[in-house]
Amino acid sequence: MQLGMQLEKLPRERMPWEKLPDVCGGKLCVYAESFRELARSFHKEHPAPGLDRRTFFEEERLRENCEVIAGHLMEVADIMEQTAGEVTSAEPMEERTWRKLARGLKEKGLYLEGACRLPRQSGSQISLTLWTNWPEGVSAREAEEVLERVLGIRYCLSLSAPEKVEREERTYLFVEEPCFLAFTGFARVMKGSEQISGDNYSILQSERGTLTLLLSDGTGSGEEASRGSGWVLDLMEKLLETGYSPETALRMVNATAVTKGEELGHPTLDICQLDLERGDCQFCKAGGAISFRKRGSEMEEIAGGQLPLGIFQDLEPQRQYLRLQEGDSIILMTDGVLEAFRDRGYEDAVRDCLANMEDETPREMAEKLMQLAIFASEGKVRDDMTILAATLWKNP
Image (cartoon, rainbow, N blue to C red; front, side, top):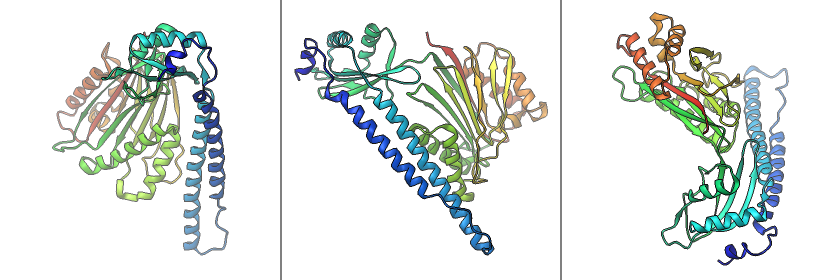
């Protein structure tokens, strides 16, 4: 374990771990082409005319399923190529910067064995290979202050990185903090005497500088509805974390829901992905209720316009983009909230309630709107109600 101390004195050469990205990136590109070739093998022509009705529909269903599989394989190939581009863009740390990092980290009981920059489309990442001789270990977050002091940029420990540096060498990823921060809040109420809500939601933070809000309304209410909406969110989370785009993940979830038939009912799905680097957001909806963008007292509606999941095999998500400003809020809700305001004009009443709110946090906004919904329905909760809100602020 003498290498960490020797590197402070010896001229820096390209180390073996810095050559690995070239090899790994090349392999990923080869794998990607293999997946594309496999996808092409699934292509089938439309059934020939003249077949009897039953055979025609069987052949057409087989063709549609093959096209779905081919599309999935093509998406995997795209993700591999994208990852290869990120891997091969690794740049060795400059000698002077290396020495400063090594000295700063040593003051905190950390020894530097490897360091490189990983440029990306938004911000950058730093990879550090570290170890310590402290028996109890050292928090990996101790390196954040050193990186900021040496590089002049604020980095935070990656969500997937280990929290503690120990005697054994390990590689830790640090991600540049985005330009914006998003604060979130929610409120939910169950229908009548139900013990379980048929609505489910999820908030995903990505190392690529995105925050994704997911909201699904199951068919009906209670445990059965929760099972359908919960299944949708579980699969969506896995696909998004793997690297699929929201619209591709939505198509894949829909295709799988079609094969399950009536087992899951037909849940809705709202996806809102906020880019914390650029300050914009993208909506994809499948049967979800109307959503809103709030800027002070100005309100903008984001309409649904799509059928719920699992009805038709072919689902082409309609993407809607919004450019956000500091202080803008995004509000998602299930249709139970709108139903509560049916005697007051549905969407118009909700829009007016939100427009009149001032300086509320996302949590306060969601809870206040929920209280108004319960009051509007005279305390009779006819359907599960869930509200999810997020507000964008500049990163100080």
